[in-house]
Length: 206
Ligand SMILES: Nc1nc2c(c(=O)[nH]1)N[C@H]1C(S)=C(S)[C@@H](COP(=O)(O)O)O[C@H]1N2
Ligand SMILES: [Mo]
Image (tube, rainbow, N blue to C red):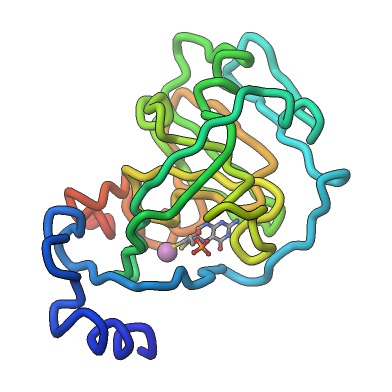
């Protein structure tokens, strides 16, 4: 793989820069440039066409249009990104709306325990609601100081630093709150239901 060859050239055989071992989970290597990882195609979705629907087990189902979303308090953060195909990118800069802000508006019912994200490319992925309550989980619209590139999820994507990258849904348009866990696109194809990189939860063995 081309990235791996370049990484080894930069960072040595283990693919981890010096002093960064505690930032890189087992089985990962560091890549200097974030690849675009798509199931299929990159939908071209303008801010006018985009909306975010929050449905399922919520007291207040909502549809946020771009203007509503932009008006919510924004947060910036720097976080590491771990893809299950073994690349890790350190210090990715993100800006967006904390997912907790949107959940506070929609008000999950007490029986809601899991979420399915739905995306404009037909992709879906499931995440446990507790993980989404972490303050570093964002609906992001800027990456490294610029609006998201189309390939990285323009106009809005999810970012969940404590999960492998496949849970960070790009071109996100829907959030469905559920009582029971259900598999999304990759989870139906053998990926782990939770997918925590520090536990190396890559695949389910059920
Ligand atoms: N809608 C959608 N979201 C997606 C994907 C996808 O194919 N479609 N790929 C996932 C995978 S496997 C990873 S690693 C990250 C990659 O994000 P990036 O393309 O910005 O590097 O997006 C995730 N989110
Ligand atoms: Mo990935």
